[in-house]
Length: 258
Image (tube, rainbow, N blue to C red; front, side):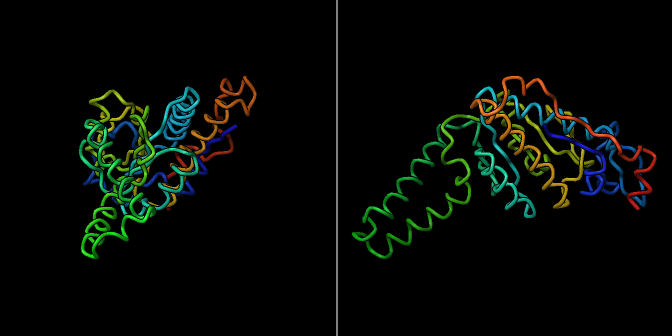
């Protein structure tokens, strides 16, 4: 059974928001205080909302749904791909192609083209082409691979998105909203929480907080898949993840933030 604690979030730097002058006022309800010109996020809310997000992802996968992890900022590229693959899910960790969701049929055409070139590389076709033609195809493949590698096995639209940095991934969020696909997101103090279905308030810049968030979401997908395949007891889905005790109270967070 998954467990969540404020101490774990605190140690990952989850509570550090942006500078107070860079905040989005809509995040006010998730802010505990400010410290040295930086907003401190209320981890007592975050720990519960992270648990809720975990449950939603787990339940989605248990019902046969698929998860698309989205995050293209430099510090998240590798860990996002690793956690998505660990859970057997999909990801976009380089430039989001406009229409990835809303123009899925066109994206599928690009995926078919990528597979076609990959097949040409292995079936001897390249050997019958000129060097210039091979170079052109390789450039085309590399360009598509960067954007499509994490979704080239995705046969249908995902049932849920897991997003880090909703400002940077605003197009992905907009497309999901347009199609009614729920979004779980790590939402920092400079973002608009009203655009997100399941908000997890927290630091979306620090690598430790990013890793923690993505690991929890990956664990949720893995647990959902195990439950779906019958490798856990039939009653496991009823056992909610637990928020553990022995955590610092809210008033201690600023002191601990140091």
